[in-house]
Structure formats: C-alpha cells, structure tokens
Amino acid sequence: MLLQYRASAFRNTLMDQSLSPNTIDSYCYDMSLLHKFLKKEDPQYSFKTLSSKVLVKFLNTSKTHQTQSRRIAAITAYLKSINAEELMESLGFKKTKTAKSVADEKDPQETFLTLSQVNRIIEAFVHDGSLYPRNRALLEILYKGMLTVSEALNLRLEDVDFKGNVVHVTSEGHQRSIPIGKDSAPIYETYLKTREQLVTDWDNPYFFISKKGGCLNRKSIWRILSKAAKRARVTLPDSSKSAFRNSCVAHMMKEFKIDIFVLQKLLGHVDIATTRRLVAKIEKIKHTL
Image 1: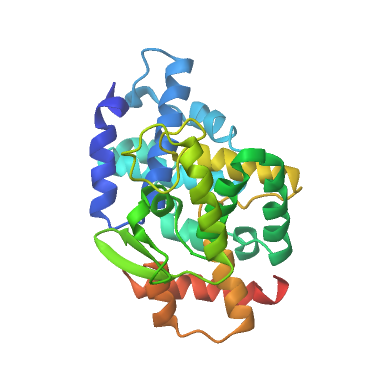
Image 2 (image 1 turned 30 degrees about the vertical axis):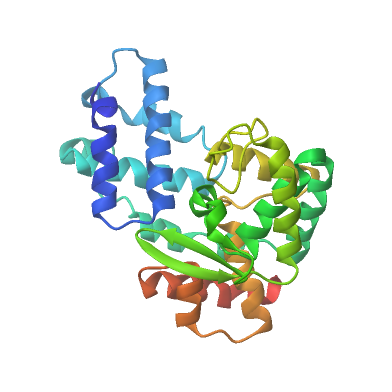
C-alpha cells in the first residue's frame, strides 16, 4: 500500500523541511491513523480512489478543531511529498493552510495552563502511590526544566548533575544545560531512590523508567499526564506535549522580563524565530495565566 510503503520516506521529507520533532511525530501519527482508518473502510484502498467524502469522515473523528486542522496539514504535506497535486486539487486541498499557518491560527490561550492548573495536576499525582516520585519528577522536568517529551524520554542518569546543579540536555545535535532549582533537587533525588526499586535492568541508562523497570515511551507519558489532569479536572491543551514547558515560560514572563536569546537557549530552539513566535503568543494572554 502506498501510504505504508512511503511512511519512512515521509518522515525523512519532513525532517528535510526543518520542522520541529514534535510536529514531525504528530504528522506521522496522524498519517498512521489515516492509514488504519482507510484500511478499515476498504482493505484494498488506494490514494488514487480517495474521495473527499471518506476524508471528511476521517476528519470528523477528531475531537477538536485544532486536531482536525493539524491532520489537514499532515495530509497536505504527505500528498505533496508523493507529488499528488491532482489528487490535492480534487480533494479541495489546493489552498490548504501550511503547518505554521495552522499553528499560528490556534487560540493562544488554548495552548497554555494557568499556574493553578499546573499545581492541581501536581497534587493529583499523590494518588499514584509508589509511582508518585517518578511522576512528580517527570512533571518537574517538563515544567520547570522546560524539556520536551522527547528530551525527557532520552534523558540519561549521567545527564542529571547534582554537584553542578544542572541537567544536560542534548537535542538535534545541540547541548544545553538547565539549572536545577533548590526546590527541584529533592524531587529528583527522591525519585532516584524509588527508581532503584523499579529498575529490572541495572544497565538501563535512562533517567525515567516504566513501572516494570523498562523504558518509558510517549504514550506512557501521555497516559500519566492525562490521568492526573482528569483527576484534577483540568483539560489539557491540544498541544499538551509542550504545554508544560510553554506554560512555565509564560509564568516566568508574567513575573520577570526575560531576554529572548536567554529563552532561546533555555528552550533549545535552533531558530530564534521559533522563540519569537512563542513569545508573541504569550504576550497576548499572559495576563490571564
């Protein structure tokens, strides 16, 4: 099948466009859902016979308008990658928005959490019992450490330097150091003590591990955060994978004036334009957080 065969090529195409890792993962995930949906509709499906009626049916499975817009952008990007210009036109995709324009049109307030919401999610972790130290440390690194989900997953034990009070983060070939706050250090240390009870492979180098002692994955983190948010009666933003770090930036900007180049280094943005777009969004809504 065309989609299945081209999946890895599609990811490579997105990487060549210098899109963020989260955007690439989201687009590939959306296309895998479309693949499953079309296969269920017709086991012998082909993009050549794809109709706007079936496509609309797939898009209507989206829970939010933001997800629907992102999926449209993902499908557009895929069709462009296989040079299916005629199909795009027949489906009405000729003037479909790009990924960046879709992201820019989102309501900025829907991509951030208030400080009260973050604290309620933290309190909800108490119900996780023996996994509380790990989940609490995970949210601490996503929020105050301002790491992406991918960066948290790839964090190694050696990257957390208690003597130097920094966390060393490597992303897209670049390394940055995030200060460990006085409040954060005890949280990480407490988790490391319980980590010894969870780990099954002592050669496992990763900082965060699953309850069975293996490696965490993106779905696991999503479940952890979603479960806590549900208990706290907080609706996670559609872009929840970066909501905690972006919210931390917003809360900092509300209290202090921060140099944009300092923010760029803390967040690990390769392009300063990415930081500027985030700052512009925050400036519009920081008074509400």
